[in-house]
Amino acid sequence: MLGPWRAQLDSRRPLLLPTRYTRMLLARLALAHPQPVARTALLSDLCLDLPFENANRRFRATRRYLRRALGDLLVSDNKQLALAPNLTIVCDYSEFERKTHPGASQVELEAAIALYRGPLLVPAPDGWAAYESHRAHMRYIDALRRFVDLALASNTPAAIWQAAQWEERAHIGYL
Image (cartoon, rainbow, N blue to C red; front, side, top):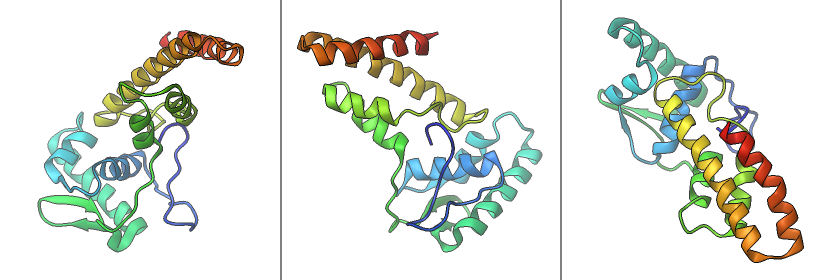
């Protein structure tokens, strides 16, 4: 989800999702997995700026596209949607969040920084995705700064050299 979009089931070919709304719906469900998400919350998250009738149409079409791609792996009822609870979800964004916790080590922060290949859900996220994208970017900048601080505190030449590279990225990212 960070940087260029890619999703796949097991080792099969990548999922071809025809619209950015379909990608956002899959992302939203993947991040909530294994918990279901209320349809009303999904409608609000994905179609925030549309009038209700247009949002409903867009949401139904988006759900149909995702059902075609996932089949029975998309679980739904009248009130909520979820990805099948038996799925194992591997997601760079979730991993990035785990590795940037407040007490993260230098090694964890370095791994998190490497995971960040660009903004969340590009291109042009809106609604829920815009909020999450901004939050991820701010977390990335914070991870860069904390990595630099830890590397400089270690006072080893290799760590200081590496910190200099990340310091420039921290400044550029902040701009």
